[in-house]
Amino acid sequence: MTRLFLLGLLLGFAGVLGAGHFYPWVAYERLPSQTSVVANGGRAETFLIRLPADRIAAIGTADASLRSIAAPALTDVEPVLLEHFKLRGADGSVIGLAARHRTATGDGTAIGWSLVIPGRGVMTMAAPLLAPTAIQTALANGGHIAGQNWAGNLEVAIVPDAGLTRTIATSAEFQGLSLSFTEQWSLTGVSDAGELRGTIRLQTVARRGT
Amino acid sequence: MKYLLIAFFGLLLGVAAGAVSIYYNPLTDTSGPALRDAQHTFAYATPGGDSLLLTHGGRSSLPRHPSDAPELWESTISELTLEVVRLKDAAGQQTAFATRTSLPSEQTEWLTKGAIMSDYWLVTVPGEGSFFVHSESNLAPLLKQVIVPVRYLGQPWSGPVDFAPTVGPALDQHAQVSGATGRFAALQGRAVESLRLEKFSAARGTEALQRRLHVEFYAPSEEAVAEAELEAER
Image (cartoon, rainbow over all chains, first blue to last red; front, side):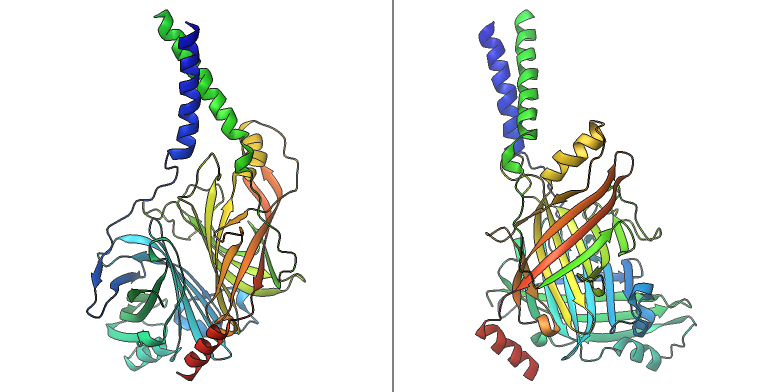
């Protein structure tokens, strides 16, 4: 009887310690990645952001115009735009979060993207922004008038040259990969309140090493 | 039947002893290092005036704000917390803005590591540039010293309490800093976070928390300088 008691005691104790060590306390749902192999080596993957559905918040200085709300905290500072989105894979499923920071620097305007994909890892990338007002300019040329509804089809290449982009940091599945990307905005409308409709396409190519 | 009851009683006692051992396990009480000569210290208070946006999947006790901030309800992102904050320097002047994305880490393990939280910061100093911080924090000491005693065991709050949660991902237990744009572009560095929990209650959870991110940049390597120059020429 004592042996049985001790056996139960030992099993319970070892079971809890074993669960503490081996049980996957945190495990994320991981959707299949929609990747393809590119001809000259590397892995291509496209991420989508659908506007306005995926916009979480955009906070910026007054120069950000249509793209953000001007927060009281962002007066009297150099031009900056902080955008946050839900991130979708190429099949349209939400797979993570994206943050995009744009700011003026001594070398011109630049953007940094941070893509956090639970279960897969993080990609952080940066690029110079050669035409910071490209969206406003394209919309104005396309006939958009501030304060009015607008519908149409505009393709705006915000980062057209992947050769100018840099990998900043990667983790987990993306660890050690060198990334390049292009950023394309397909705009289909603007509401009278200034809300953009369309899709942002981030086309990435990941290669092993630098 | 009697033997079965005895074995079951032993099993229950063993489970209880295991749970107590895990709770008092000193191996998971790891605190992070201090960064005494940090070149930059960025501070913010949360919840409150420094937080411009806070949203999550509904699993945090902190209220989302602004109230119309979209909930992160999709199953793939429901564990994430997204916060946008303004960061102040030691003199209390607003110097930067940061997006902090947090999620429980798959590294979490209760025998040797603790409750690990991954934080990804994208920090922008307006007019100067941006940098990225990847930090792993052990929240087990916070759970054991504050959350479980106050929220679940009904003990009174006695604070403030200081924590140094950063335990990685670098081998020396520091967070990794990577320059992204502007004057930070060619820089690498390390960082630690320090927390001062000033008020916590069973009913409302965290009511006042001061967070500080201490950042130290290394001198850029020749290779990094050459790469930055090449990029500027493009």
